[in-house]
Each structure stands twice: as C-alpha cells, then as structure tokens.
Length: 301
Image 1 (cartoon, rainbow, N blue to C red):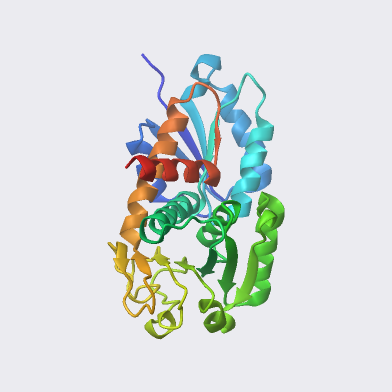
Image 2 (cartoon, rainbow, N blue to C red):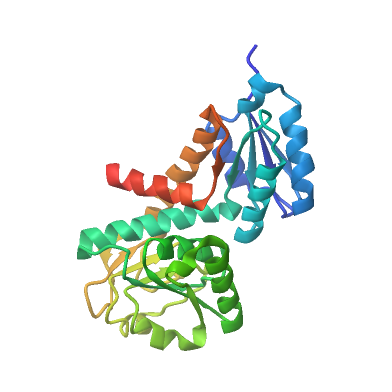
C-alpha cells in the first residue's frame, strides 16, 4: 500500500486556518496535521521529527506548511526549516501566512494585467499607494510591486509603524532597489493626488478610500480592493469588478474587486500546494513563487 501524503501545518497562532486545511486536502494531500503556538525555536525539532520518520523513499510524500499572521516570522520560519534539513533527508516547505503571500501575489498580478489592458502601462514606474499596508498582505504586495519597479508607499494609521514595516521590507527582501516608503493616514489626501494605483489591503469592513477621496485622485489608473465585507474598502469598487470603470474617478481609472483577486489567489494557492506535493526534489515556496504563477496564469488565461 502506498504511503499517504502528510502535510504538517505549523503556525505561531492559536489556530490553523480552516481555509488552508481545505485547500491542502483539495490539492491532494492525504492528511493534514496542525501544530499551534509554534515559535521559531520549535521549527527545527519539528522539521527533523518529520524528515527522519519516513525513510528516503517517502520523504517526498511529506511537506511542511507555515502559517500565522506575520510575513517576517513566516519567512524566518522558512529559513529555519531549510537550515534544519539534513540531505538526503529533506522535504518541501511552503509559507503563506494568513494566505497573505498568495493574496498579495494575485492582487499585484491582476493590477499588472489591468494596467496593461486598460492603460498600456507596466508596473515599473507606477506610483502605488497601499492602504492598510502595514499588514501581511500589504507588506507582501509592497515587496512584489517594488521588485517589479514600482514606486511604493505603505500607508497606515501611524507613520512610525508604516516607516518600520517599509524599512524591514527594504532591508530583508531587497526592495531597497526601488525603496518602499511609509506614511500615515493623515497624509492620505496628498498621497492620493500622486497615486497611479491604489491597493486596499485593510481589515475587512473598513473603508480606507471614500468616494470624495476618489475624486481627488486625478492620476489614478487602477484601484484594487481585497475586502469582500461591506462597506467596500475603496468606494465604488464592486466585488466582481475586473476592469470596470471606477465611479467618481476624474480620469479613466478602473476597479478590481475582491472576487477577481480571490479567483487568482485560489488558483495560485492550489497550484503551490499541488506543486510541493508532486515535487521530486524539495521546494521552498513563498510570495515570489506565488507571484510567478499568478502572472503566468493570467498571461495564459
């Protein structure tokens, strides 16, 4: 009898996400085992318990998934997992805290497509404003957009926190090639006047850009919002919008809604779970791999 595909799901949080469990099982993992309240020091021993228990032929039927709510902790845990491997005992690892990596990848990829489709423009050179940008989705989106050549500003309630998140993103992930910056919500009106793209990544049910603020965003090309809970994070953006003209926009801005982003996110996360399950050699997957697939899926779709 063939041995099962076992996915060990590690999270610093008190619960593993049911969304991630469902996605993993639907992607072909036979069993999903949760580990909660995991800190960085726990990663090595847990990984080594997993890699030494099944033998070389079954190692590829074993995987590690890293969840939680913090981008940087997840990446540190990914590095810790990699360092704990002792080849040839080595298994694949996939980090996607709160689904932030696959959501951010889908968000930036869909915006990139709309920039090209609606405005014949690339991400490179665009001024991108990320509202609610200090969370994991906003930070991951900032890194991806900056690496693609955009000028990125993270906006949050407090400038010191936005500055700190921007600095960590720049230092840890090489985004200082373009330089992510931070700013406070108090300066939104000024920032909107110079934004080519606005991304809404705040908590569900919080509006971060009103209809009145849309009217002052004279350069705006694309407004994208991951919030699926009313009210819309960006006024006028509908759940199913995917290139729909944005109401109250003084220019030709188009809207991208949560379902359009979510469809790409779903495909991306499913693909990465499936990819690690089917891999012959160990993989270490994170936001850059998610973005690569999201881009490809839209290009070929």
